[in-house]
Amino acid sequence: MSDVELIQHTPRHFVGIRREVHTSELPSFYSEVLPKVKAWLEERGIAPTSAPMSMWCAMDMESGIADTHAGFFVAGEVEGEGEVTPGVAPGGDVLKLVHRGGYESMGRSWGQVYGAASERGRRPGAGWEIYVDDPTLVAPDELRTEIYLPVA
Image (cartoon, rainbow, N blue to C red; front, side, top):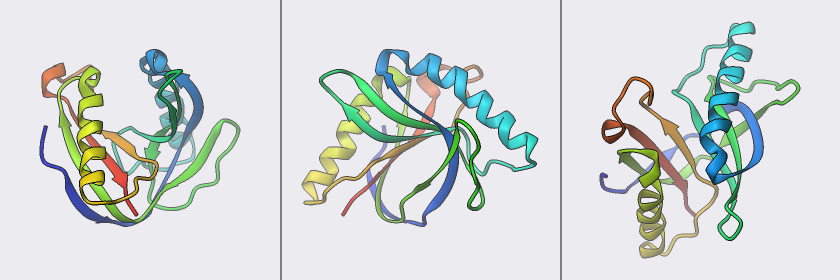
């Protein structure tokens, strides 16, 4: 893990597929939708401007159901089609942390970011992750995931 830093973030457009998924089903969700979104972008000649990402629209901690929008950041506004829909990561004050390690330990890193928001007296918004490293090519303990949490 690294330290949480407060950054100024410019709004970023993305396209992805949004679903409500139980957290135990997230790996299969990503395995299904990320290749679909990448192919959709390629068919339209649109280059992603990031590694795969996921916007956390809502999370029900009691049921384990996550409302997540997984895809890729793009250079500008893109009109969606079918299940591929656009979104925007907000601009302004954002807490950022680079999580190092496997996805199963990400909860601790998110806890650290939410704790930093609380310590600063800031109200968190819907956060997102960018999966910097490909888990099929990088060992789990060496994976890097950027965590972003907008704060008001």
